[in-house]
Image (cartoon, rainbow, N blue to C red):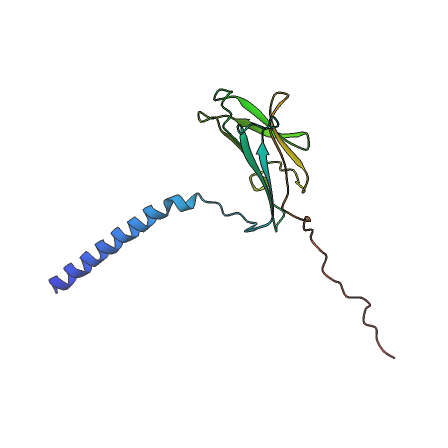
Length: 167
């Protein structure tokens, strides 16, 4: 009887340890927030190049539209070797400022906007321009493409006519 109780006690201790390890391992997952929109239904990209034709600086921009209407915009710039870390640059879509990019120690910067986080994200169409500027100086520029026509929700058909009593 004592041996059976000891075995049960050891089993319970092992299960408690496993439960504690599982809880500890799941802690990082508690902070994750799934994108309610799931997979993007539209992606537009732009390759950002220097207007002077030089290799550096350069970058990329990407716009994503999700089925639920959520939008994301990411603008990145790299190899801005002539400006110090901490320099604030401005990202523009079709000449309208959309946000600030601060250069890091590696001479790179990134702006990421998400409507899901309550941020204002402009609608981006094929042919829209994107620029990153230092004051009035354009460092990189590009044109969005690759997305095709913007999907729009369509109304579901409604019944026509109504039943009437036959006489």
